[in-house]
Image 1 (cartoon, rainbow, N blue to C red):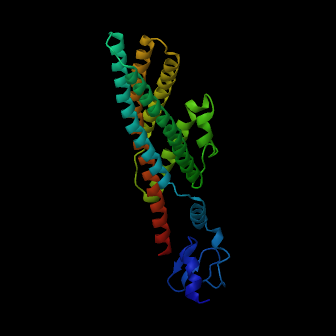
Image 2 (cartoon, rainbow, N blue to C red):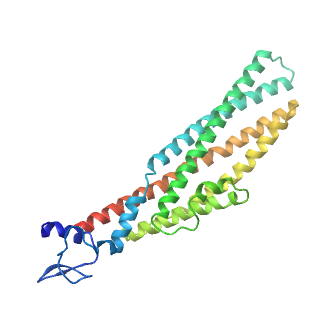
Image 3 (tube, helix red, strand yellow):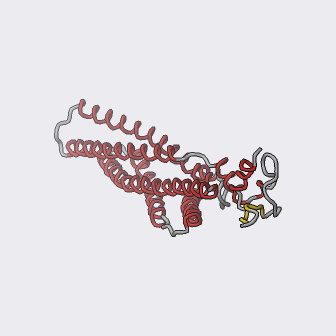
Length: 278
C-alpha cells in the first residue's frame, strides 16, 4: 500500500495535525501514517464513529412522508364529497319533514350513496393512520440514531393506542423530533433555525377536538332512529367534517416541516463529511 493510500484514513480523521516540516501527523501517535491497511486508531475518532453510526442506522423516510401526505389529501377530498352528500341527505330529510313526496328510490339511492362513502372513508382513514404512524416512528427512530431520546422509539407507534397516554405522549414525541432536529441542524450549520412548536401545538389541539367531535358523531348516528334524530345526526356529521378540514391541512404542513428538517440534516451531515475528506 502506498503512502498516499494510507493517508486516506488520515484525511477522514479529526485526530490529525499538520506539521510544516514533517507534513500530516497523527495526534494519537505523533507519527506519520506508517501503518499497513486500515489505521488501527481510526476507529477511536469520535467524529467518524458518529458519521459511521449515522450512515449505518439512518433509514429513508421521505417516501413515507409523501405517502402520508397523499392519503391525507385524498381523505380531505373524500371528506368534502361526504359533506356534500350529507347536505343532500339533510335536504331529503327536510322534504320528508315538510310533507313533500319522496320516492323509495330516492331514499334507497341516498342510503346507498352514504353507505359507500362511509365505507370508503373508513378504509382509507385506517390506511392513512397506519401510513402516518409508520412515518412518525421512522422519524423518531432516525432521531435516536443521532442523539439520545426521551422514550423508546417504539412508543412513537404504541403511544397512539394506550388510553390516557395517547392524550399527550404523541405530542411530546413530535415536539422532541422537531426540537432535536433543529438543534442538530444548528450544530452543523452554525445558524439558528425556527422550530415548529406553534404548528405542532395547533395540530394536537385540533386532533383532540376532532377526536371528541368524532366520538359524538358516532354515538349520535348510532342512536338516530326518528326523523328529527336523523336530521340532527346529519348536521353533527357535517360539523365533524368541518373540523377535519383544518386538521388535515395542518397535518400536511407539519409533516412537510419535519420532513424538510430531516432532509436538510442529511445534506448537512453529508456536506460535513465531504469537507472533512478534503
